Length: 219
Image (tube, rainbow, N blue to C red; front, top):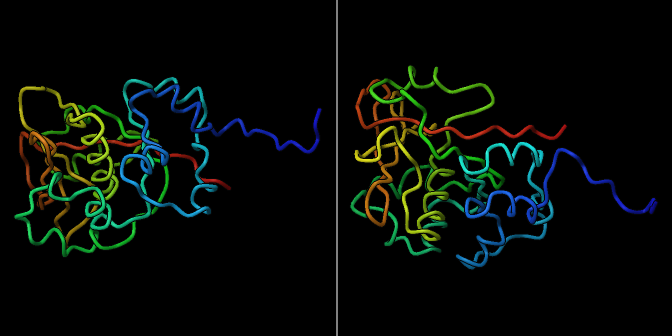
């Protein structure tokens, strides 16, 4: 046994193995760099070189979730780099001035379920939050937007699947805009998405929520 060789932690997966397991539902930082020509610091590359979950867990969610690395760029910087005119409705002037657009994103891995939360339509935000299962959370707007763009640019397809494929749907995020309002994303246009402001008390048959899995934080 080579005592100088570092032990491989059982609760992390290499990107190579994660890519093999997730197939087309994997968007790591290699894909980010190749597709959008982004630059990442050596520190970020080293810190996030492995995915913080077990191989068994990835095998269990393969086919029903997307594993995605979120870059440290702000949403505005990210969209500008990838060609913003291709991906969202530019008539929304408030969008580019919002805090969540201008603040740097927290880099890291996110594992988003493809299917929207069952029975999450026609409910207020507080009612929808009660449907989120243990070990999961509602994605933020920056996380969701980066994933929508990566998925669109890679496949040309919509990201999420609703309870019915023949109706339009919007997805509430966990990002607040002001008291009583949160950001929502409409991912149903042919080649772009729309960012909306939704009142938390609003009830709509086309307004649901998505879930992402929580990764265990390092001790």
